[in-house]
Picture 1 (tube, rainbow, N blue to C red):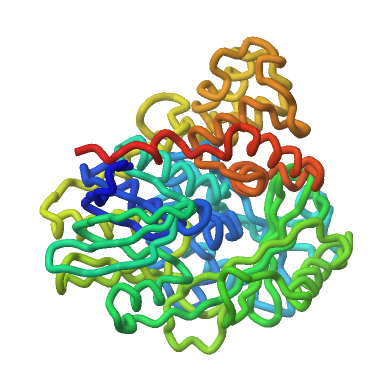
Picture 2 (cartoon, rainbow, N blue to C red):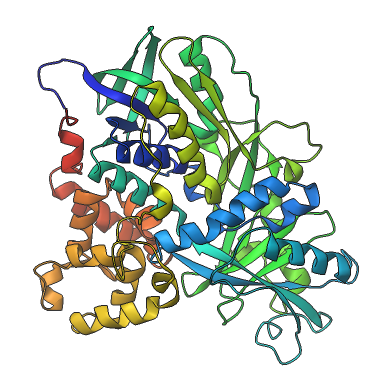
Length: 521
């Protein structure tokens, strides 16, 4: 950051620190562009940390004949799993057959197509099962006797955003969370922007601009162009509830509902079950989104239709909601709106690319296509690279993605535990899942448990807090407990207060060194 008051100069200013903005910043930095990524809040603070945590093709989209979207997402599924096997993993989904809903032959045909729309290297194919005596049948009501099982993947969505931003930073990008883009002026060959960070106004001169503001994309486009964008967004709220664990096994469930929607029930953080999502039209402020009582009742109703153990709103230990910025396609219901994306290019002056729509599974492909246009437009053409690259911490068995990281993750964890046999096994596994090989950075200089420093909250030591503040832009207890980790589910408000107090005592929530360093020439 310049102390002289001069404008920060970069090739590309990316506004929006969700998964699409972070993915574009990473891809562009890896092609040699000087990138500045900013967000008015924390990285992934909104839609990108409020998903169903799935890497999937979208089985239900086949009903809406979105074969292209499903094929694209399925092709990305194993690419992503290989790129970050510590924060992603394969997951088997059980779909109990309800005779009063879709016929079995139709489900079987859909799964046959789902298995074949894209190549599978290590995910098993779908199958039909009898629930009697099967582990997946035990938590279900006895009237459900048949089910279909298929493969997709699970992801820690908030960490996926952070790892993309971290990779972008390590390739030269300047990453500025909690930085509002307030002013934008377009010129023939550059953009002038005013960024507000901690009360300071930073001037930026960028050769190109990316609008990846998610639910705020339309308003940012109007701010940049002085006119409404050509594409219209339809904001849809998706809400989830978390309840005490309803089943012991590691599979997930997909439940069909008579209204045509589907609801997932996922094993979550060991002791819980995650249930969602809803699809509700949203007209309010995206900053104020929250689950409604009717949504909570709806999700409980769907779960109670299938599970023996009944849940009520009083059983909900946590809930979250996100606003999905979906492309308006004149669909009659929120559930039927396309989850595909559109990249709107504008070269009438300095280049502008706006991102509308999308889903977390296709973020890498979206970013690749965005930079395929941006790099030549900025006179810096370079080949795409992310399909064969790992995210930070994903290099479990070497520098290139392969199936070993996915299929032999437990073996890698066992080796980590042998190297640090003083770590409690549960803590070693949590570090492995969150940080992968970057666990060694967190544990540097530690040879016994006291070397991690004080236990600020149960299972959360000073060494991890320092790592998150120095390397991952954590600046509050919420950043740590609800996005960088999910320890907030296991800890109470007093522990959160202790974490916040400890972070403040470190000198006022420092940003990473990257956020105080000028962009490379």
